[in-house]
Length: 125
Image (cartoon, rainbow, N blue to C red; front, side):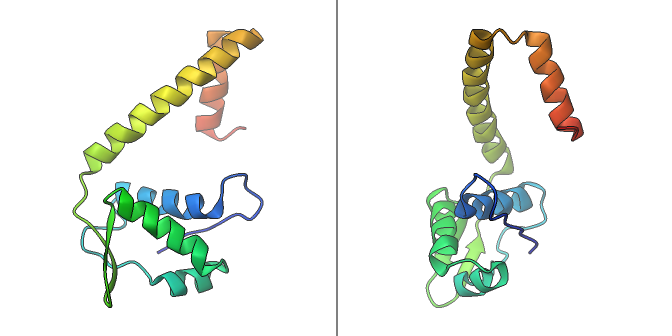
């Protein structure tokens, strides 16, 4: 499992781990019933605290994405990828609504915002 954390990011490390595991599932690089590394092993590999990885795993478990089998480890559940995408789209829509309000109040036009978004998707910013 290839997870990379940035200690300089504004995003908390546990969220970086959480989001990257979700991405691996959405891209089908991690599949249902596949075992995740132990909390201690992943913490060691990433050079982060056990508490940080534990928090990421707990959040994934709350969302029903992984299940912990005591004494056996953590496994990817039989997740509905389309349902996850649907939730992510709803979250993105809400965030974009806030961004549009902000941009409108700052005098940033729709076309300027589209250009920024296009540049971000193309990796230019």
